Amino acid sequence: MIEAIIIASLLILFRVVAFVSFMPPLAGQGLPQTVKLGLSVALTVILVSFHAWDGAVAILNAPSGQGYLLFLFIAALKESAFGAGMAWLFGLCIVPMRIAGAWVAQEMGLTIGGIFSPMDHQPTNPVSQGLEAIGVMLFFALNLHHVMLLALETTFSIRPVASAWIMPGWDHVVYLVSTSINQGFIVIAPLGVLLFATVVMLLITIRAVPQFNFMSYGMTVRLAAGMGGLVLFFPEIFAAVQGILMNAGTGVNL
Image (cartoon, helix red, strand yellow):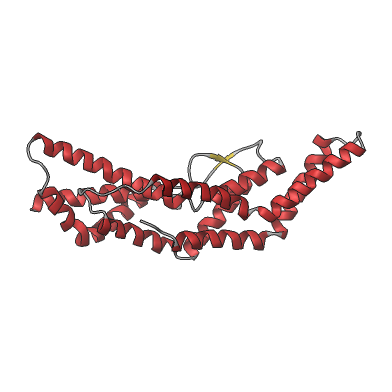
């Protein structure tokens, strides 16, 4: 029994480590690996006292002999994949800010020089980085990290380690992905209308005055319109980001 409890504790650690490692607010480059490891171990110590017994029962019912090692190997892979997948689904609440920033930066002409995102190692732009920073600050300000930890703890109750459980439907996952993309355009909708009107005005001006150079004057006008729109519509953008995060916190479906 002691051996089964120890193995169940290790499987809990695998799920927690994968979750902490891939969770976007925690997976950034600014958080040291030792902090992530310490947080994972601390969460595991707490969760083991509540959920190690369920996993130990499943391990005791596992096949013996050579199939036992294969069972443990598959269980370790499954727990790691489950933790990473759950972190990825939680990370979709940050995707709308990145999409909104990418679209605005493209219309403003800021996609020439890329920088790296604080959330991962993917190239981004200053607008996306600013909106992601706002989203991360709101994530903690709205106490969504408590929802995140509660959801992680709940998974061990409804899907214990080393036991068989049903994977979530792909239709629900596809719906979450498509919704995050649509929410990105909702966040930046007022500014998007302004930039679209600016481009239309520039095209009409170029049509009426061919001497007007779009690359020299047009880019400056688009940049000024984008910067002014970000300042003017910042309350609406902030409220939209807050609404998306609140929906993500109240709509957790395990």
